[in-house]
Length: 355
Image (cartoon, rainbow, N blue to C red; front, side, top):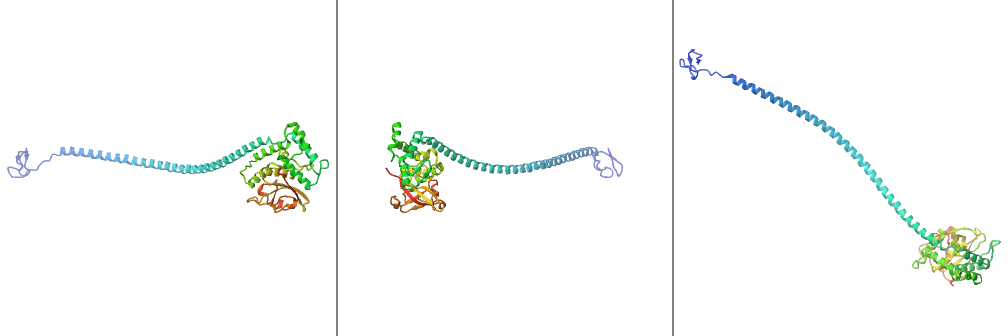
């Protein structure tokens, strides 16, 4: 039941207008359900706000944490990057050291191989060299030959006069150890004891020495001289004689020493054995008032090496043609040494007998 607001007459709740005056009834709103709905909406908004705030807080916290984490990781990255750069520098330095050590190793390895080869060669030479020394019987016979056959020699006075006769004897000493000449009256005792000739036994040792030196039949004359001078200048030591004796080539090899005439006799014998015509020459230096023995070889030149020579020595009894002066105490590269060879003048010379 409801009442008209104008005339106050009651009316049924289902009509919209007053049946007495025609006034329109006002609609009474039910605020209670709306109020409940509003309360529920407020709760949703609050929850949403709370969720938003919570999410925002979480998001902000995550962002801040991530930012801090990023900075930490970025610092770690820069630290690792610096460490990498340092390690890269260390690596490059070690790589450089490695390359340097590798180069040093290769150099040392090559030197070792070279020295090892030289050692083996020297060891082989030493082994072969042991077959070269004269024995006591050969030495006794060589001394007897000197006492009875060497001209102008007084072993007690230690005086020796160099002349054509003495140079001929020196050349014969060369020929003896080449198996070309011998003194039968002196050497018969040796033959009776050994059954062999002293000169032939000596020649066998000279042949072995040539093989040790490494001279080949295919070598040129210059190469042969080069190899022989390398031996005489490096393996024979200069030593003065007490009595100025002429040593046989095999004796000089045995002692590994001798004076200028011993050097010359040995070198001339080796030259002759490999097919190079040679002579023994006696020289004089008037400035220094001294005398000296050297070798002469009958060749046209020494290839690319410098040398001193005589274009003709027939006046001294040598064969026609050029004769090159060889100092057996020097290697082939030093044969044009002005300070050594230019100051000497040849006095007498004698070719090595070829038979």
